[in-house]
Structures are given as C-alpha cells and as structure tokens.
Length: 181
Image (cartoon, rainbow, N blue to C red):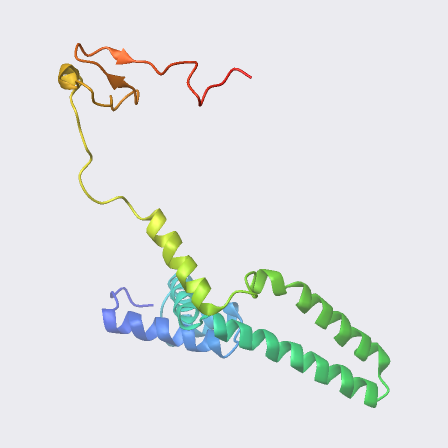
C-alpha cells in the first residue's frame, strides 16, 4: 500500500467506480475488496469510497425512478408466478405470490402521498421549506424605558393598550365578548 495521498481526481474516479458497481448490483463487501486491491488502498478507505458512492447513486434516483423499479419488481413477480403455475411448480407460485404481497405492503412507505399529484407535492414541499427556513429581516425592538411614550398605543409585551400616563387599560369584563353566561 502506498502512503501517498490521492488527488481529487483520483478520489472522484474511485467514488464513481464504487457508484457504478453499486448500480450494477455488486454486494458492498465485494466492492470494498475490489477497490482495495485495484486502487491499492486500505479497506477503510474503500468503505469510505463506497459510502460516497451510495450517496451519488441516491442523488441520481428521483421519485419516478423508485416507482418504476417498484412496479417493475411487482410485474416480474407476477410473471414468475404465472411461469411457475404453467410449469406445475405450485410451491414457487405460492412463493411468488407471497413476495408480491410483501412488496405491496411496502407501498405506503414508498409512496405515502400516492393520491397527490406531482404539482401538489412540489407546492407542499416548497411551502414546508419556506416555513422551516430561517426568518429574514430585522427583529423589531422597543426599549422598556420608552414605555412612557406609548400613549394610546399597544404595549408590545402584554398586548394591552396604555393611557396618557402609561398605565394599562384593561378590557371591560362585561364587554360583549366576555358575557358571564
């Protein structure tokens, strides 16, 4: 093993190689062994390349790709079940049916908002992102020592209106909004 540090280009190539092997369906432990031997790196470094490769693969998948794969698997299981029935292998047909049922049980976790259209989903995502974003702009500030200047104004701390002397004006308990019965 070499003690030299890899260049950025080499790192990117190794991470992309890991992503390609993951996309082809290689098991993670085989990818780690392959990268360790071909790139002359430690298994720990190869595992780091595989972790980054996984994120690269996931960035390429969007919701429609996941749905396509789900329905492709569902269709393949249906075809396997029909082929097994034609061949007279009823235990394989039952196994394929059970696998289809298990796959269908996963549908709510794959597409929880399946009844929503993509436009509604994207507008909902934008709404949530906007609500969770940090508030921009200045925070309004008022000094407590300036409370004497609040003649007829609303106190920012209590929400009560003040009179000319700065005393609070409490709402009438018998007002139309606070009827006792």
